[in-house]
View 1 (cartoon, rainbow, N blue to C red):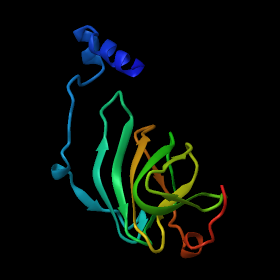
View 2 (cartoon, rainbow, N blue to C red; view 1 turned 60 degrees about the horizontal axis):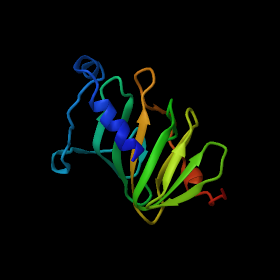
View 3 (cartoon, rainbow, N blue to C red; view 1 turned 90 degrees about the horizontal axis):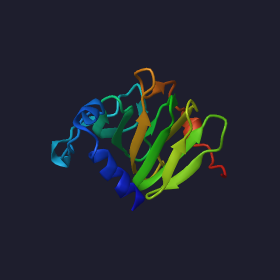
Length: 161
């Protein structure tokens, strides 16, 4: 209920203040209009697709996409300047922060990777996975890509949390 009150308060701002904060109308991007592209080979191993990629206009810094990984597919090592949230919608995946244990996650889980922590994520070797990735841009970029995850790193035993 409190959140609803805050939203109503924002809607009652004077017109000049609303204009300064950006759009005041809702925008819906329909699933049928979203583009799906292959995950670039420089940043992914295996078959991954990216759908509905977006970058919100300032003052927002939020960007995101729906990313689907076929079995065996994963990202390269990378960091996010303001961290990253992954909302897992289908399947089973693995993730790891450099120097930490490899962890498994499942549909319905929400992952958080802290700012500037080198990490990777992807499907397991035998099951695909889809997540919604949400991150913020800092200095004009939401991600810094690094080297690819080796097969030895990817197939290492699971650790414990």
